[in-house]
Image (cartoon, rainbow, N blue to C red):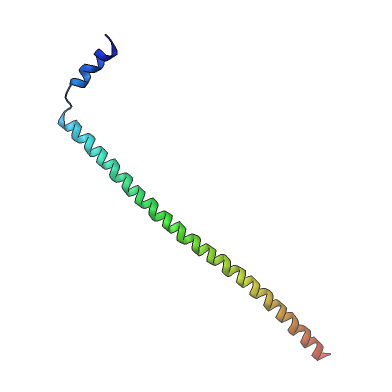
Length: 88
């Protein structure tokens, strides 16, 4: 018996309607799951993108605060020297 003779009778049999319905429902469920997973991934990507913007703004603010602290330190040093010069 050749392979073709073995496969042909299996292909000629009719599939039960319940089996076809189960395959269709399973396929529909898989497609629905994939669609909802895709939507969740899209939402997460948007969240990460907005978080990246916030992180960039915080980094800029940190740099500005550091510069302000340096300026304040220089002003305090000058004021200390001016007070020391006046008290002499």
